[in-house]
Length: 431
Image (cartoon, rainbow, N blue to C red; front, side, top):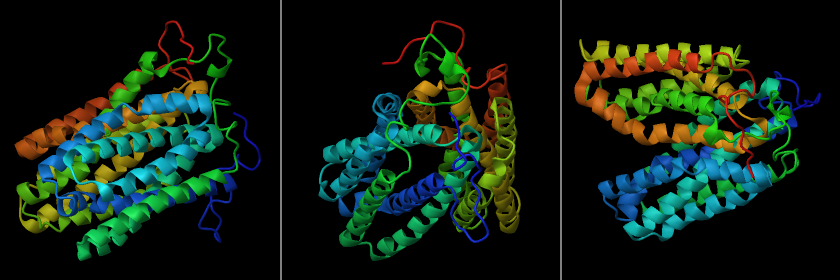
């Protein structure tokens, strides 16, 4: 893909600007901010709404969310393929209002069956939309600035989640059906707001479809590859999904470990989350510097994996000593963990783009996003069976998993260049 003077510069903001100067990236940042504020609102209150207002049991909610998570794993590839056919922007203009309708639908749910159906639909739309947005960014932004742009978008996303979670605190305080439905309405409005911003995105639907791309794969006379037969890409996706288990460590394993396995006060659960969120907001762009190609991305993932392993070992040490020592170890562990998360995220973006066939970005991003979704579904179980159930020994096992996945990923991409992710074998034309 060629870059114009308007889009060729890296995503920087001047001292007088809080948003990037590039109009396309600025619009993407605003879209990400609006979307993440809505996500922060909904995620903060959804479980309490389902149990206290709809009347479902915690077990029913957990089962429904698990089923929906599994459905979400399989949504990325078909949505990505559809984006390759009709254009990412055009597809997202349809999906956004559907997501808004799904969120509003929760206000009318009164049975477990309806809850499962609606949650599955909402999750499929959400996971699929994430893959399509990734493909849109891959085609709309110049290759040389994409990693830093994605880092900026992730920083903004975390800031939006903080704002949304803070706003949801009002609904939690009221603990009423009206308050929870108000949050649903605001979340639906955020989806519609993103759709309006997308409609004005300075890139045509045609330009955001299966044109342009990174690397030399576009010159392959055999036609586009299919991600599901790209063995190298599938292996990299699986190994990076292992690194994505870090999210379950942070959101499930660590809170339970703090309360059940250490002498630290329960308030440390909030403290480590704040540390993680602030570090991502402030340092994600900086962590992406130097990640410019497949080898540098693999090195970033390997270093990040070792940091994740180190964080697990520090968490294990929090079991010993007085409360103040445990609290200090948890904060240090959260710092090390987050640094690893920053590096593995930056490396993963580059690998997902540079190893893909640029003519099938929708499908390839769908596969990569499905790997992440699978990690998020099984992550809570993996972390519970290791760190939560077996304490320090379980943390050591998790550390070993991370420490092995990083070097394995480096080996998996050895010798690969941009767009060269396919293992030897016949290419298959996608639709």
